[in-house]
Image (cartoon, rainbow, N blue to C red; front, side, top):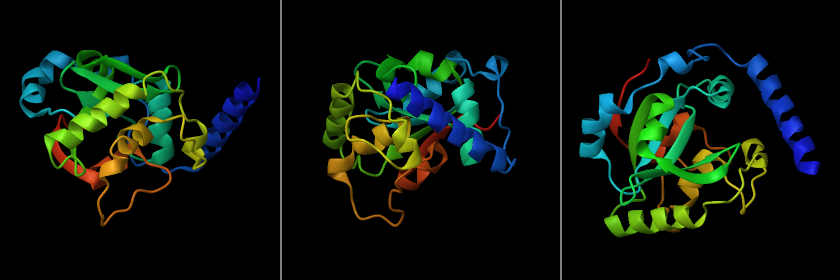
Length: 197
C-alpha cells in the first residue's frame, strides 16, 4: 500500500511539473510514429559496441510524460550488451530488465547511440555491462526521479550512469542528482543518431 501511495504522489508531482513546462518539443508521439529496427539495422550493427548507451524517444505514455517534464526530445535510456544483442533498461512497470535490441528500437521514434566517456577501453565497458546484468530484477526508482534515490532501485538513466560509476573521471559536466535522457550526450560521444521525427 505504501508503494502505491508513493506512486500516486510522484504521479501528482509529475503532472504539476508538466502543466508548468514549456512546449518547445513535440511532446506526444504515438505508435504510428515508431521506428522500424530494419530501417537502421545495418548502421546500428556498424557502430554499436558493448557498453554503449542507447538513448531514445519512446512512444509510451511514460515517454510522453518524460519529454514533457524535461522539455527534451529524448525520453529513455539503456545500456547495450553486445554478446547477447540486448539492451538492459529500467522501466516503471518491470524495473531493471533485458530486452532484445530490436524490441528496444521498435518502441522508439528516435535512437541515439552514445559511447560513454567512462568506457575508455573494452574491459571497462564489459564490467559495466556485467554490473547492469547483475542488477536485472531490481525495482524502478520512482523516488530517484525527485532526487531522493536509492542504492537498490534504478530509473533508466540512473542505471546506465551508475554501472560506470567505478570508472568516473574528472568531468566538465558533473552528473546531477536527477539525470535526464536528453542530457546523456554530456558524458559521452554521439556515434549514431537516427534523427528527430
